[in-house]
Length: 324
Ligand SMILES: C[S@@+](CC[C@H](N)C(=O)[O-])C[C@H]1O[C@@H](n2cnc3c(N)ncnc32)[C@H](O)[C@@H]1O
Image: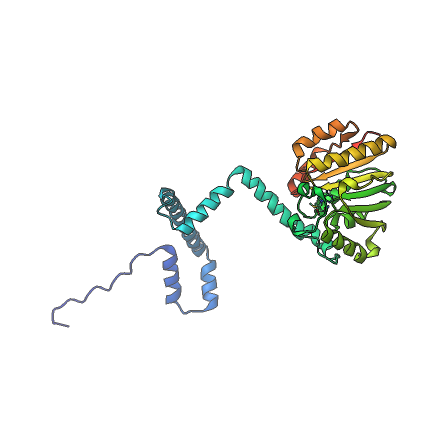
């Protein structure tokens, strides 16, 4: 140091934000967990955490707003192909009609996981999944009117059964288009008099027979269960009271023939018959078609029941019954 040179003023610490000051202060003191904890818990430090939180929140908001403004100014040429594809996807899924479809798809997966898994565990051949008819052996001219295989959800099935007030021991259950037999074995857990499935795809009927043979007898309230390899139009309508299931089985051409057979059987022997339609492909025309049969009327459900199904079930279910 030169004689006469003045001592430099000690540097004054730069003012900092509340949090930084707090950390600096903590570091300058002998470190110790209890000291740090005490320091964090004082009212003053609580206030500084709050201020920092507010600051971060404000910055986050500003960042979000700026990013959104910048993003909305991008044209699709400026975006990378991947980002453009993602943006197109988001726009597609945001359309109201697709939101409904996505929600039903979500429900479908939820049903598979939450409700259907328990019964699937009991099958020898898994019934879940989807099989297009062109992969199957079908010896029938009605193959062109048939719908691909996919099983009924347990929730839709049980809901439909709950709508039937009659004692089931007098009824025969028929599954028109029985697939691998999931509906047959769900029906077997109700006290039906007899249960029969009609399936025209050889491989599916084989699987259904295997599932029926291996199903735990202790769970079956009806053990008279069968699945026939035949076309639905050739199946003779049982003469007892009946619950007939149509789970998205075939087109109107086949349905009309099956209905005509049912009507003439009813005229010969008037009795209670329920028709349960799950996922009816011709939902809009179904009411009209059934009205023209003259012998069937729709079952009306309470608003709460309808809402429950709309919220929980991916499938539409419509039930009709004969007038007697
Ligand atoms: C959507 S699946 C329903 C499977 C089953 N009912 C269930 O709920 O698990 C429709 C089934 O109907 C069968 N099918 C379509 N047309 C048919 C017909 N004319 N005669 C018999 N079965 C038919 C298909 O092979 C397919 O297995």
